Length: 256
Length: 300
View (cartoon, rainbow over the protein chains, first blue to last red):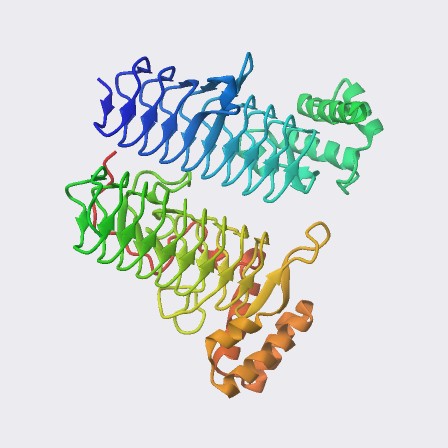
């Protein structure tokens, strides 16, 4: 049986796995599905057509599945396994056919906001006050520092790090250190790559590619260098992904 | 105040000193102590091994003593101590300490923490400080702590650093006494005492010391000669920060005393620490003042 405080409100229709814990004054809506081991702390709210994967921990005063447009009715939101959703976080549900999707093992720190229809990968760490806009896409293993803003519809590549007070617009490549308002590629996120088990050779290749494409300044990408890296058949697969993302970003910016 | 509303959850083993008032929808965990005269407004959640002193005012939505956001935290029973007469605005969050950081997060007396301010694990916030709206203190930050002048260890009587709205302090930084950090400034290195710390243009220049915090010097109420010496030292040190080391030595050779000498010590320590952060040397080791708490492990 789930442990539900007599002071909590769980609406009829909510589906709770056996070992879910719901603390006092938490609210769980009628269309919510809570996986095994979920903990909903006091004064937290889970509403909308929201699904929380196993082992997800929602801290006090967080809101998951908040309607982006109350007039449009309950939106959809799926959260993967073992996510930590800290105090005062708001995760919006997307109305209509779109779903706000969050992968597994993310740490979403105090006061973050994830907009409707945003897609977040797995193993991300988002520091306090990170604001991921509506429809933005954040790939796996991304780290953001405090008060980062990811603009609506922007895309942050995997293994990238966004420094504090930065703003991400458009598409930014994977494996990168990003900083600025709007952010620029400042280097290769080698520390995280090391921790994630990338070989020294991969990291060296990425650093070299970064130097060639950005000429060290980080202000504008050299498209020819990116195209060269992509055309090189012997090039490292990570370098190709990096170069491809740079080219994609340029194309998208040109269209915009 | 008549107790009109009793819809709240206070664990039976929590210690609520008579005279403390707990509002509706508050939850108080089993290892919490709350002192006399402290007022928790609505929806305040206090968890962990947390001790709150007397006469604090804790506004709606504050969460105190929640688990640290540190991946190295492994469930150890660490502490949060909050002193007396602090004013916490809405949605303030303060986390307990970690073993690696010395078991303890501490907020002193007479502080103002504005709405949505965040004090992370192992931070020390001393007395009479002001944290503006949405100020972020990352783990292991010390605001305005001194033992003997300006050493970053242990508690002592101190007075007011000011961090304005949405400024953020990096791990292991120290904000000196009576310093002022302006709004939306990222603090990546130690802020020397009595200085005004900000960035002219965030796109082109890193934040740094841009002047003297005159208001801070006034509030410190130093003896006249000490104040004159301090102002002289501040002018000398920060006219050209590239020559800081030489200036410190010159000032020491002149035999400055009191706050001016302490300022030199602070700057010297920051220079020696990696990235301009004196406390950075404690990264990965338990700081010397750390005392393991005499409580059991947190039961989940």
